[in-house]
Image (cartoon, rainbow, N blue to C red; front, side, top):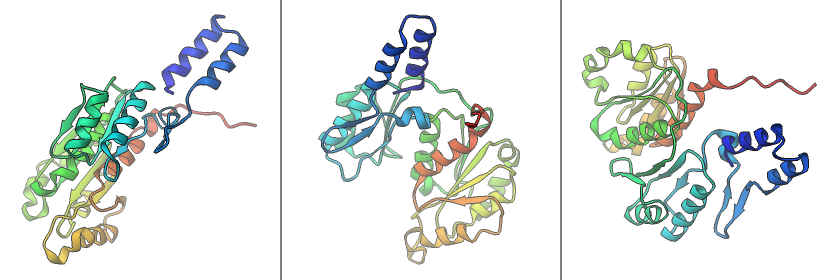
Length: 260
């Protein structure tokens, strides 16, 4: 179920093409949840949240991934996102959508059916080092699929702080900044002190033994001395982009009058 489908039904009723009862019956038949045995697909999510369910591939068989993808695409909507996909998952999605695109760096499979209206300010993705790019690209591609203008600032970590400082103007113009960093995770605090935009920090599992698989960066970001920094789970570029999209679209949401 998409917002456009609901608008079309309402317009048909308004123009007298559908009776009141026909409109009610049409809404009844619109899929909210589809139970296919191994998954209950939330088709109503596109209407509630602006985008269909996203497929997290690990733990699912190729057949399950392909079946879910086919049903999400059949319901209509702006597109499809599948994360952490291996070769078998990519093939499964492509059976349902031959036009699907695979990004080997982020391990994401995407299908873009239509362009969403972009917020006025971009989401800027900042990564500390080249090794952080897989998580940064997961965030960048997700933010793009959700309709945001995306700008990338990669390999600008604190070990060469001049690389970041030359982009201060770009940081100030951002709607939201996503900072992706491993090792000691200090980049999020530095960026948080350079821009008035909300900062979403993503610790990565990049680092030597004492980084404890990203735990050191996670704790550093949670203890940031810069105000206004929100912290995601380790390596969760997808979650960071989804939060950034919600923040970036706040000014675009229509006002809803409360019931009295």
